Length: 284
Ligand code: GDP
Image (cartoon, rainbow, N blue to C red; front, side, top):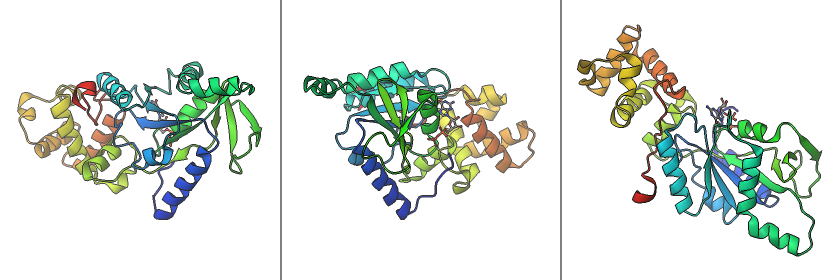
């Protein structure tokens, strides 16, 4: 899905659409990138969802640091938000998601059945910033089994329910919200993971942020990938970027080298990593 330029009109429209859709769903699946569970959360999301049942889904877990992912799940649970992590390309099953949604909605479903209402599929919507993996997860969950158009009143024109299992239906249009742009570091995290367009950020700034981050948090990553010596590792971040530029055969074109470093990071060629850090239960 293409990255969207967010203008006030876009934001107002996205909010309106989500608010309309919230009336017809039982549960919201809020997607965040497991590498940046904080920076990829929309700042308005809690206010918009209010007390609608809510499952946090940490996507791209195959690229994130597994210890950090575990900590983040504990952190969200502590905030009262059930959370799971997924690799939509490999390990997520409809059965798992259906079961979790059922357990979150347990009381509501039981109350309906006690009132004599017929059993029906749970209705869900996926919500998140561009590129977080909404379409990939949706495709994975629905296997292209499309329910009839307009079979549920209240669905905005042009939208339909996609059948995930006999017990779970998903709205075909995900809620797309903008990411945070509160500070420069958040922007760099979004750029480094590919959540926002590269053009908005100078690639050398993003590369320098990455260098600094890996040196502090995953000290083996850079020497392993770029065959760096102890002397290289004693350099400042800027000089290290220049040294890497030479090592990968780009002479002094550090712009191109920065882009390579960013691409390597996105593809986890420096290993799995999580930019937003939490110590889980101990530290919040
Ligand atoms: P959307 O804009 O939120 O709908 O995001 P997409 O579903 O289009 O995904 C954006 C990019 O992330 C695509 O290149 C996907 O292949 C990739 N992607 C989505 N989910 C995963 C995942 O769990 N793991 C990995 N490695 N890549 C993913």
